[in-house]
Amino acid sequence: MTTPQQPIGSPFGYRSTAREVVAGIDMSGKRVVVTGGYSGIGTETVRAIAEAGAEVIVGARRTGQAEDVLAGFIGSIAILPLDLSDPASIDAFAESVSGRLDRIDILINNAAVMASPLQRDARGYEGQFATNHLGHFQLTARLWPLLEAAGKARVVALSSIGHRICPPDLDDPNYERRDYDKWNAYGQAKSANALFALHLDKLGEPHGVRAFSVHPGGIMTDLQRHLTDEEQVAMGWVDAEGNVNERFKTTEEGASTTVWAATSPLLDGKGGVYCENCDVAAPASVDTPMAGAQPHIRDEALAERLWARSEELTGVEFRP
Image (cartoon, rainbow, N blue to C red; front, side):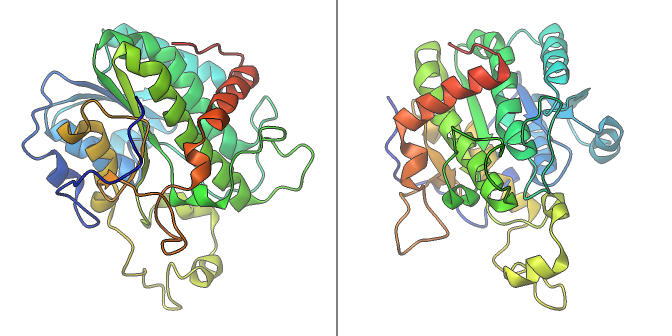
């Protein structure tokens, strides 16, 4: 059963770090896959989980950079090539993971692009939707046998407060008949991530697989690489001198909700919810425009339609 979209009384919060939320949790023997686990909050996600004893596989588009970033980290960490905008790369990555692991206890769909200029993959699909959603949809489908084999597994999909911008346009997700807007594209992709987790949890629960979506918070990372300084000043992210807004989290704090959703015993038997600040988020309200879950990411009918559209666009049948 899908968990109610209401806070559950987590002892952690806005300024908790990834290491703090996993402290005291022994992850020895756990097999974890993290996409993009070598940049921004992905790095701190991998650091915390590996230090807790998990065996971690990182999917990286830039393997050389990943090796440099993760060198010296404590624990078992392997790096395999993965380009989420390339279906062949996704299949090759999944095959490599299957050759190494007999199960996956935790899959963290972390990699993302944000507010990029219009880019299209080899299929002609819009880049943000293709990378952030469709790529992870196909990857999760390919890794499904390993998730099911765990008997009790979790999938964490990185969404964003950006989901409030708009729901996905299932009639024209790739901007073939409408003008491209980079923030609209980001909003529909992040909404898709949350809707994916909602429906995956519904389908996965009978198999012991639960899914969660996560808003990590505002963090200054490489995710902002497509934004000019002027844009970031206009949005209040930095001031005219380049000082970061004090409400932004550090990367260690930004990784905390991901790690909490992946490991917290408070979430045992729960799933299908959108989380923020190391707790299940409350529904959005007029009083909290920058927090909470908007109604459209809780729409089970929309989630089911997105799932079917994703199968159509990827050519991947994913029916657990």
